[in-house]
Length: 239
Image (cartoon, rainbow, N blue to C red; front, side, top):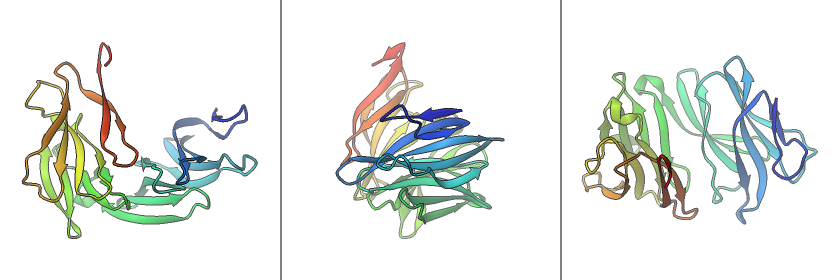
């Protein structure tokens, strides 16, 4: 068993294996809760929350023992006390927002696997889906933007490119997004960070960062605009 104790020696969240965790707070950016994705055995995971202000309160289970596809998508200060997560359903996945104080949940969107498994999404400041990645049977991935209640393909990443390509973030007003595209024409075998205009998919993408030696890995985002401010490329050592 493992435990997280960010403020004291007392265990905050315990489980067979804490896979990852996030801090959630209020609009003043004061941390009030820790949310953890926990391995509960038999290939299943649970999503739990624990108050840091009231350490004697028991942890709250947000999602119990999901077999496949449970993942936290986003935690950010503008949505106080909330976390956005993918939750498995009988026919695919649902995007759900949870209130960590009471466990209340609201379904943001449903994604049936029959339409192609949605592996990632980008949301605007109101947590509406603005862009998504949809897997195809041949291993390729379609990058799609939201248009009048439906999704329209922006580009398709071939299988070998899709592995290292991903949505990074969306501007809060939903007008643009940042993505890493591994099919980078400026450097062989490494990705580039691009800005995309979501209002007009025909406009050329703007390249913002690349490294001809290694893939772009970690991004540091501005908490207000979500714009990438720092990009980490791993080549022998982090740069």
